[in-house]
Length: 162
Image 1 (tube, rainbow, N blue to C red):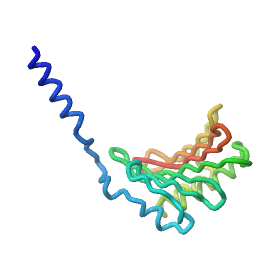
Image 2 (image 1 turned 90 degrees about the vertical axis):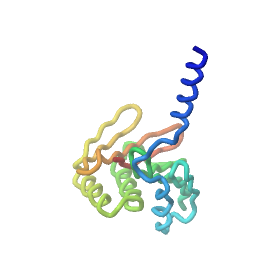
Image 3 (image 1 turned 180 degrees about the vertical axis):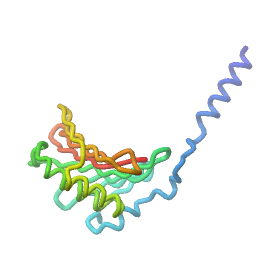
């Protein structure tokens, strides 16, 4: 019985200590997508999270993420402190989302997103935790835009994954 338990523990440890097998090559997920953007000169790259924390000239912070293991995604999360527009000013936030998408997404993804926003072909759901905008896409599940307030900070997220 002791030997069986010891073998089970060793096998379990071996199985769970193996690195997760990824569909996407983690070594190719670098900060290249941020380096090419002139406004993003001051940032720090976290290779483990595959994200850049960018200090913008207006004092806001943008966290740009590109990567994944089983699901690959690209996103930008904008943190705005201080006197910011009202969370209910949807047009303002959609313009900010388009700006982030233009900087982070491929040209074709940006075009699809911009068209959907400009033509108002999206689903808009709001509740006490924030506003959620769902934009259909042929290749990905959908683009997602969220607008929330966390303490004194407005948080705008835009992204997708597949």
